[in-house]
Image (tube, rainbow, N blue to C red):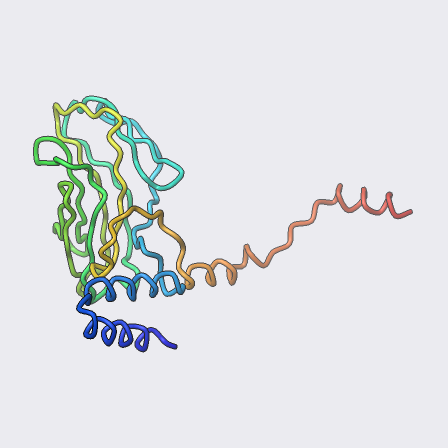
Length: 207
């Protein structure tokens, strides 16, 4: 059964039982778990740092914990680069900012950097939807802590998912099938490193 058939089956069941949103969400999530792409489309490429009195700690699961009082408006870029092909022409939901964010405390942004900084979505803690047109060739996701605000173990769980996936539970980014295949096809993956000392040791054991 292909993805179109899965989605069509979900619509059929929904029309019978009146739960279209739930079935549609399940179908979209299956689209992720079947390997088409991960639930979380946002790859965290940042490293921990301290800036303007604020420490941003990148955790093993891709979340970011923030501590300290911001001496000035402080941006922490989590991702910058080209959008994945699967992001285009789909309604996406940005989530993961702690509740009660604002222009005086903290927020997260996705910006179009194709020609200039254009804000596409802002999350204050309740999520935000956006759609990427194919004219957008470069984006960035960032966390902003505003001057004077003191963060105390404030953890962000940055996630960008298809809006049809209604479950906003955080899931770390996972490489797509295309990324995994590209890694396997890279010259580095096909190079066997041989240590001369190990070879001689093996030879001595067999003599």
